[in-house]
Length: 398
Image (cartoon, rainbow, N blue to C red; front, side, top):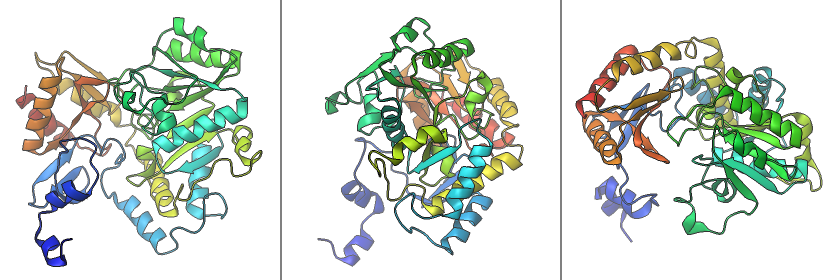
């Protein structure tokens, strides 16, 4: 065992590799000292423009003043008090109230800690409410890596080593009218992303999403829309489904939902959510879900989105990215607000661009089910000059 002096003199990166469990053989390994706005700063003072908002959570950037003030104020009041759902906690109640005011018909919020937990809770709720065993999910969709959420995943590249997962799950193609017949009276719920994210930004055909809603109505299956990435203003709407003329039975939120803090939720009508309160009681519980400090951060994030022109301005910023990202090596740019996939047609080229960007101080990434496309999803506060510089760096690498 190292002494305190030995630990103090051991490079932090080495300690990270030795003692922090890794998710891949080659993590980025940047030593981040501080963050502010759209920028991260390493221990040597080099700054990096965060073009992916930490893979979504930092929708208002890092340490947004209003979010930070809300966190600091809540820290001075109370932190954890009791397991979720027992005490009346102001940040939870006010956040749930504001969400209900901005969601048509969805008035009951179950707070959790992450998107995967939101998916797990929604799956249990759907089974409990309908009394049915089966689920439908889309191929090339990602809803989380926990047991139930991972069971929704197809292809099995990321799940084969963990089989068997949950039974009773069938997969359909996103935007496929033919596959809707697979939804039957045995289906508890259909789980889809409003916009497919990890497939490389695939928007729905409006008529398909409406037909999906109708098929769920006909069969009594619940429609669960995953807006863990698409929600909280990312597409230019507070919630992406609002532009398609439908309302889900259950909505999944996380990432930007916590404003940079660990927070998620599944949201439904109160009559649906009540199914978790009896037979058995405490059928779904969480210790830290909706932590008061995290809920305060999320509430401040939503209040900021609703009181500023950030969502309104996403269209112009999206258009600027599309205007600047023109190059013979770019096959296509797909986008939904400030969420873009730059299709380079080759995984090796994408990795080369990512490496070049990091060397120049720009953080970007790829997509789990589309490694041929470059991910862009910056904080909504990104400026025109920052967009222009980011695009210049990307084009340099092509």
